Length: 169
Image 1 (cartoon, rainbow, N blue to C red):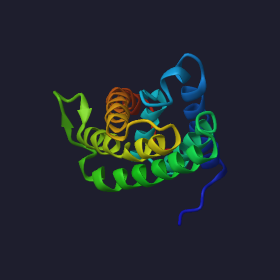
Image 2: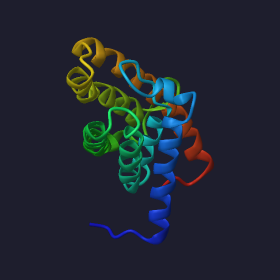
Image 3: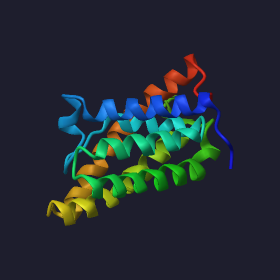
């Protein structure tokens, strides 16, 4: 296991804090929780393609942000889901990192990861089914569509940022 430097810990803390701010700050908090989710902060998941330390950052950010929804159960379910699926997505789709689709606008790895992560919203749907008594399939569909949309938009933003700054630090 790689040991982190102080600089790495600062980067992790900053990205985790940014995730929290982009999730809980009004008006974004109104669209970040529940059956119809569109978390702007999810775009930060793509940072893990540049450096795996950001898997830790988005997991911590998600766990802190989830304190504001259904409490401790959401902290663990959402945190575990983020850790598992971001790690797995980066592992599965890293080989496509330099390939592009849609006229060079979206990296293939980002596109496939967006689909994969949208499907992983079944974990959120199951949690909401038990905790909030929401319909399972409809909740999976709505959270999946929101996740896919926010990740697709985020993929364009993160890809553009990567061309103007080194995100692998």
